[in-house]
Image 1 (cartoon, one colour):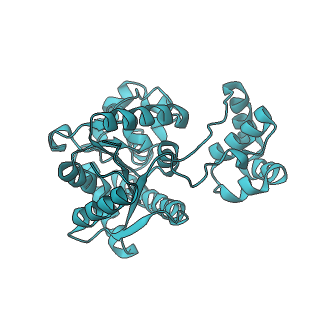
Image 2 (cartoon, one colour):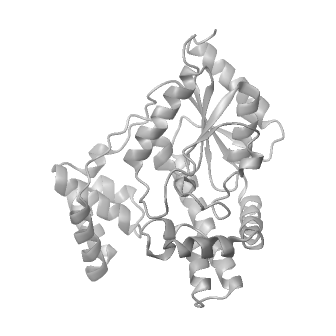
Image 3 (spheres, one colour):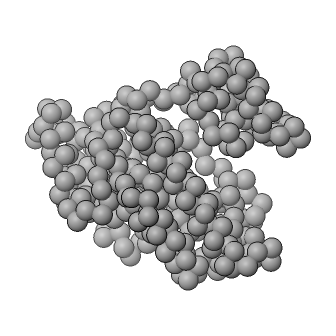
Length: 310
């Protein structure tokens, strides 16, 4: 039997990707691979809406709880690990189901994507320069060197701008030349979940308030005992950055909740923009009750079309 097509469930935060992935895994005999950069971290559970062990229905989950908070999440490392998981799941005769909203991680797992080299010292120098001259100055330099990359990066995303300049300096090639093509490495069905703006904004407000009522502050206190505020990546995650501000006494709990809600809504706009640009995605209304039925039918057609019947 040939490998079965991968299913990827993508879309913005709070659209129900995890629940659909679980339903599909149960129905089709699948295993789930996370594509959420923050869920990689051990102990970051409530703020990342990680599916609890008791709620995973006995379904194996991969690329969740694989990093200590002191480690930096790496697209390159994730690409290798996620693709190894996909291969192993397929060898077991199960269906690989990728689920998450970190767009670059999704593409790293599924698409032909070249991961450029890194140089921590060069990156540190560029980050220091950004602090001194400002992100707009570095963006202007990138615009002169690689207009395509500059136009594709959110203007306030200092880390992404620095990364583009790092790659240009290391390789002598435009950063845009290393961007992924929209070409799957192997047969894949990619479905996207979307909701109308009022419904999604409402879900985000409820979800954020629930994070605090479920004990996010206690979770962050425990992580802070392990050095959370001194980390480069984990401390910036949505909810965690705001909870750290609350613990430091700089903002109230209500201010932390409101700041997280607004930051999450901004993230959602970026996620929607990222995924909207991909013509391969089959978009579905996340409020439908028959989502698993529809995706299973799409998968069976994709399987037949790829000549992958048993």
